[in-house]
Image 1 (tube, rainbow, N blue to C red):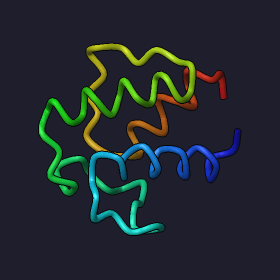
Image 2: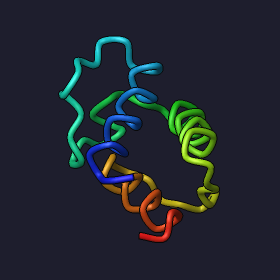
Image 3: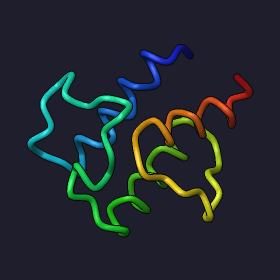
Image 4: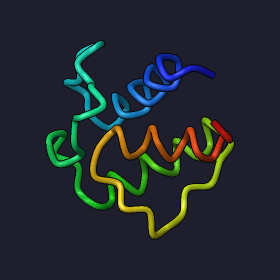
Length: 79
């Protein structure tokens, strides 16, 4: 899966938690704080990503931005 496809899937997952997210609005540099995500939102979103991508994201992953999540997914997929 290429980065663009991964980003689209992440955007779809995040839009389930952020109703007012417009298509194409999410950027790699977007932080979860920018999205007004609290720690529970991040945990829920990470679990949804694990299910979607068939990977395991470590509990101690320090996810601050969409780019952090992209990097972890690519690493887990062996890219």
